[in-house]
Image (cartoon, rainbow, N blue to C red; front, side, top):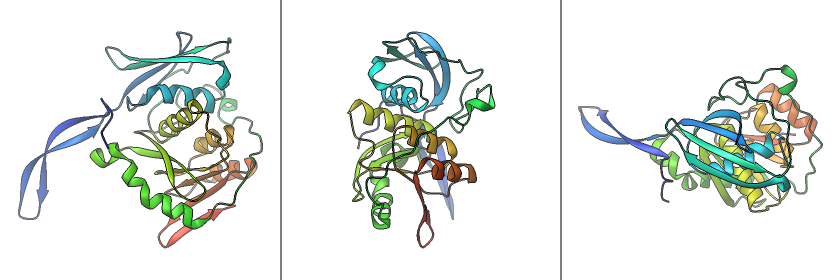
Amino acid sequence: MALPDGASVPVAGRLVVSGGSSSVVWQIATEVPVALMFNSEPHAVMMATPADLEDFAVGFTLSEGLAPLAAIRGVIAFPGDDGWTADVALSIEVPVRRRAMEGRSGCGLCGVEEIAQVLRPMGKVERRFVLEPQAVLKAFAALPDHQPMNAASHSVHGAAWVSPAGDILLVREDVGRHNALDKLIGALARRREDFGSGFVAMTSRCSFELVQKAASLGVAYLVTLSAPTSLALSLAREAGVGLAARARDGLVLFD
């Protein structure tokens, strides 16, 4: 699979092994500021990998509850001197609170000004199928083959959309786990996919903001490589989102 343009940069290094070393060229994942704008008005600056930025902007809009899909008229992503900009054209006026600082790639909260902004109200998610452990293990086994950026850099997260049978249907990657999920959500929304028809598998720990983003779109199951935090598990149970994490000898289901 070809790498997206600008997703990584080649950097010279030295490979040290027992008995000596040799020169190597390593593909380093790109991390740049991405300014998110709505109707050309600034909203936030996120640190992200500059690939699939139209998906990222749509997914961020939906997962943060800023506007419905029907209000999105289009997205333009373009490079600037110091990073990228993704401008979302909305058909309605949406009250948008600007973040006070940039959102780092490893954090979903940077710039939030009030505690009330952290935990957003969530509806109850409908589970339309039963998550089978073998489907999850099948997806995790296949996921590395669907991550070209991580294969090159070994430093980006993947978010996969998976059928109930465990077949990977779509993957998005980013240096930030929540950015990867936003990109996946945006890609699915732009394709008018049914969020209740599959599950999300991620190569990260399960943090609470991932649960909020999944629940807000009606995703019934979120599975991750590492276990959930206590807050993530509490929110998932409140929203009806089933969680699972890979264990050394199998899978742990949190119902």
